[in-house]
Image (tube, rainbow, N blue to C red; front, top):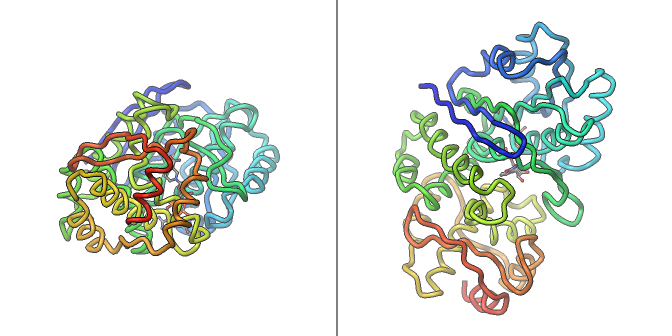
Length: 347
Ligand SMILES: NC(=O)c1ccc[n+]([C@@H]2O[C@H](COP(=O)([O-])OP(=O)(O)OC[C@H]3O[C@@H](n4cnc5c(N)ncnc54)[C@H](O)[C@@H]3O)[C@@H](O)[C@H]2O)c1
């Protein structure tokens, strides 16, 4: 199957294609969307040996590249500066094309470099993890971490083209695939319960293209309404508020992003139940366990609360919490910090 979605944002239209084998046609699709004189590919040290040559060799234009070290710890300004130097050395101009080939880390860093180099160079995202395919490559959030916290410096910058090839997921370690499934489950709970049924099938990987499409469609629809994250886009943060706190308490090493989101979704369900809503946590825990994801928050509750309050989604004395009332229906619920403290201690 082949899927196409488009997203109209402040800096133009993003075309998103989902198709097995798409990487093999990337240069021709880039040729339809852009008119560059040269191309610069940014990828990481784990993805480069697998896919860089297959992509670079398709272009009849001059192609240069930067291979950044793999890992979240390299998602920082120093890496962006390295990319700037390589872009200058290659003679890249604002009419040329930057391609991000990799997971969410590569996509976020490269997107930020593309947004800021010469005040903006056209960008194509070719995501190679499930998390990047269903989430980070779409919607235009780019950025890097600072020592004080994650994603604290960045820009909204839509890629003109997103090429999603599920075939590249075959080389992903099982744990990294499971990380992406945490975001897939998130989409199911916030907008479309059919996704949960698809994810629960033992052979879900056989229909991964359709699963990715259903998730990207939700992200596209949400971003189209609230590109700059001032309202509806917050529902994409279901599981992320406590998830980010857990990630922080684990020093970004003990838990991957997907694992933290899994734990955060269960905690959000239990918190919702503590507020008097129906307790939906049991089926969620079952699904996460089946997918190889954790569900228990193993940190001291006072520490969780402290980490949560330092999260950037706190506004004044309230935290915007995403609660799921029934599978497929999420609500942004402002909770006063003191009330939240009581609920967190009971988790
Ligand atoms: N911009 C957004 O909207 C958004 C949304 C969600 C998450 N994120 C960010 O995404 C990042 C996490 O992304 P991620 O989980 O993709 O991590 P990642 O980019 O670190 O990739 C995980 C690992 O998989 C390797 N890898 C990537 N593709 C591969 C492939 N096809 N085969 C084998 N190995 C492969 C990478 O080298 C890396 O070691 C975080 O920094 C998070 O903040 C951004």
